[in-house]
Length: 96
Image (cartoon, rainbow, N blue to C red; front, side, top):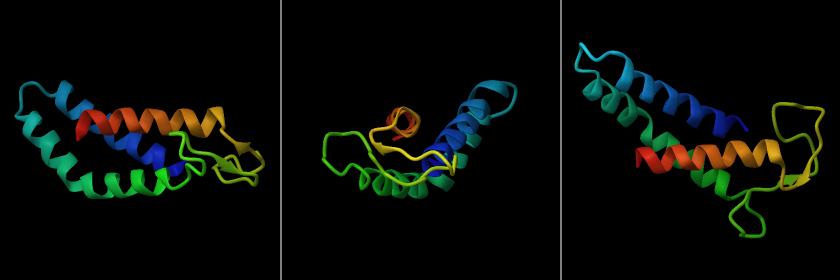
């Protein structure tokens, strides 16, 4: 889930820079900010896609605590991890 959360944080900051500083040239600043992270974001998505074991478009958990809630054990599709993954994909669609 850390990869998804990282993408969401970068996207949140990008949107904030774009929308909240209208008196400055923050659209350009936001684009520069995003350019600094885009390669890492693409790499994270590629790694996350590798967790789609059955190639159905949704990542699966592997039956051990493989997210930041270390005592949660999930096998297969998880609402928590899957929801974060889908949110990260939507963010990436917007910025790429």
